[in-house]
Image (cartoon, rainbow over all chains, first blue to last red; front, side):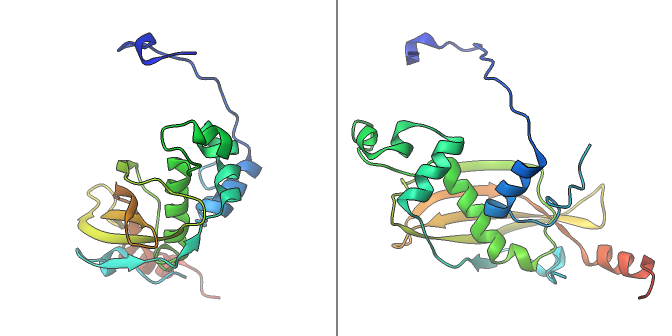
Length: 45
Length: 160
């Protein structure tokens, strides 16, 4: 368990990784941010 | 096709969303997916916390704000997203069973220097509860298409 005293300015924590899937992006957008440019995937790399 | 362009906004203009009831289950479901802290997940665990009761994640408030605004004035506008958020403040806990509304007030207008077909509109977004107390505020400058963009695309479009 980390308390306030256990952190210092400049500390860096690696917090893991996440892979975004098209399905997840669309499902979130449908619920909270239903803009047409997201389902269209215009910015797909 | 949404009809409101950048030119149709002006400082002082206010847009309001419909109200939305926030259920306990929606709070817990969001928290389980994105912000699994005890005070957002479980009444028993929340009792031991600082607020003493289950409350919605602040990130849930941000998402609800976006949805309420999307369903109201953004869906009628040539909204093009935004480069970021300047400020978010969580002013009051959002409790289960609360009915919330979103309000957007235009603060400033700025045409884009690099892209003449779009402009920025600086807003104060507010999420308010049933007593009109502010749950959260956001300062943000999203982009909207200017009329010139749609005029240009109409001219370049083959006739059907």
